[in-house]
Length: 362
Image 1 (cartoon, helix red, strand yellow):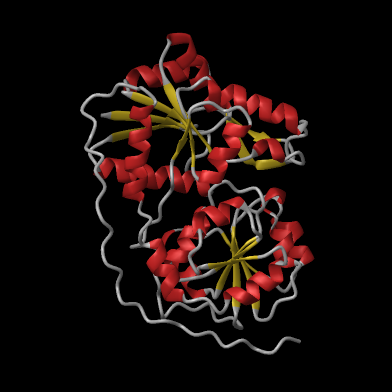
Image 2 (spheres, helix red, strand yellow; image 1 turned 90 degrees about the vertical axis):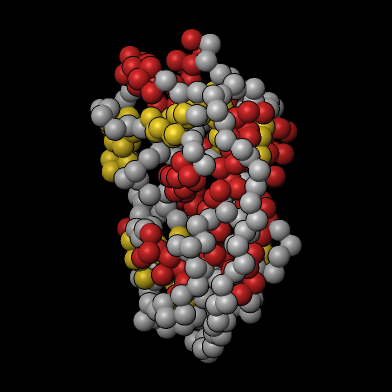
């Protein structure tokens, strides 16, 4: 079985979409599925106005058609609504090829970056995704929202976490005053990192990530520690060294960073938004409050062991199997599809609990 994933977001970019697609592709490969990525590699690119470091592809229909013909996939999945996604959608529609899509960002809500009325933005997204045979949504609340907005054939696709990489590390340290409140995000206005940095918190605020808003955020909060982009082991050690992951976004659709932090035993503080409610459910692993400072202080009392135990049940293999089941449910006929029976997660290792001493404020 061979699947092609068309995406405008791919390495060397570092964001939630890239991490999700990379992880689920690797999990599908382990299940015996060949995954090929149609990205901007080999295509001309242009910088976005006002953000020249962010580059988008300028794909030609001929180039996209040639790559699809060369790969000869059983199924096509379009992950993003950018130029590559648009040209792949056009090609599939022209040739009568069924495809699925996934919904990763409420871009229609970001009127600061895309100055288009929300109503028109949602109309365009609905037009894009409804051309496919199914739209995958990471959470139950997002799926419900898409259905209410007129999206058809919405399919649940829960994401996972690599619990072997993201794990508690009792020796992890950043050498900073505790407690450490951490935010991991692309540094853009819509991620609402400014709300986190404006809080009066004890200890140290740490930010991991890059983006066009970094200089402005660093200027507004000179006492925060900006570590830049971190990946793999480096990122996992930062999660493990933190006392609380602060998730200030009000628009994120899946919250991969939430699962990564929980797998490292780090509890979550967040506004009561859909992404956090869907990830944490009723488990005692997060504090959700409209008062974000209160959520941060409250999260310090949560059990790190409970966070780890909860995250270990959410694997990328289960996510990959759900993805493949969605492709079949969408009516796309594939050759030699793998068995989709789920396996039980392994017993969690016995990681020690770390206690945090809260220093005096002021």
